[in-house]
Length: 490
Image (cartoon, helix red, strand yellow):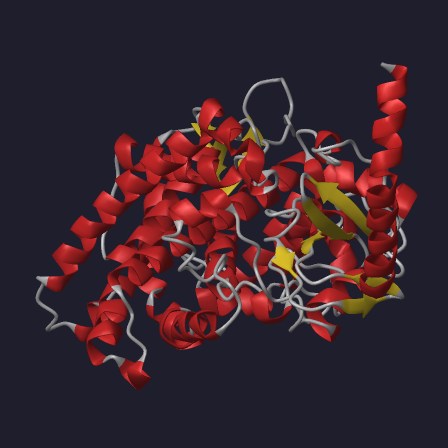
């Protein structure tokens, strides 16, 4: 046996040497200086180190390996950026090279082979649908035109709180219902209330938040099937498709005499009929855009509003400061109007601080490099996936004083904003792939919170205090709902 092994070794030695020489020359040509990397295991790489809160795990790893580190998730090399400068290099200096999206199995199922804006590949198709969204769906004029929808839904929510007469109210439930209804009315023309529709939205977000082993280790895609992840994603995609088919049929057949009452589906169908500039907006594309609006418009809007409210309840001094501001602006009005919001710097500071501490998508949406590039002295290969740890950047002690503290005042005399022009606070991303719906989301948030604290004094119901446990997934929610007692302000 020993002799046989020796013979085999000597026979294979030329091949081993040839492979080593080939590997040396190919690696020296393609990659000269890789970013620092933590040790990895065969096959799975660093997957086992991510745990249930990848943004926290990656923050801890970056403290050892630096603000630009290279990890291996299965067969996929992943560059992780955890500093303001690293984020700026990726989303501004070299934004074009890092504007692609990697192929991910679950979004591919849910968004009609990624025909949406968020997950579609960078190129002409993405440019066309992004242009449609920015010019026709999310422009300042269009967002303003749905002001009555926001007022209607806010008034309904306030009425429900008032009718509780001081009894405990599940505020989280009311906030998510409000954001769902606003998005439904704006996108589809009417609300779709009931447990079935709400459950469909919940399962959509659960599917998107599930970790797909097959996206990173193709040979182990059977694990996704065994765990039920693919089956659940297929089922929710099928049910959402059936729902959207009915919505589209309903819109195709409805009377459009009232141009002012057009919703987003009407606008997309009109664009399809006009076939503007030769770009054909197919039925699946329209459905993908609508799913995009629901997943981003509902989930991240509600999450931001819930966390900001949560922090105010935990910090009574900040709550009193905000109430003082809104009452000074309100001056006895029946409602805080949207025109009043720009006069409220503390309100805006509360949301900035809430977004800083509780970034809705802590790692944003993954990017992918399209070319070999030198980044801060490191060689990054084409096809490398990129994660930007916006959550870690927002808690970087070299940028923020007392980064774990909720202190809205830090933004009162600061130029830092969340709109993607600076990189200290990037909850909505930045550059070409930044979120185009920032204004749509934040006007809902500001209007609701301003009126909530204008009309009611809120206190936590019960004696247990605020549970700050987070959920796992692509969007980080508060795990347990906010239950409050609400007393009308005198």
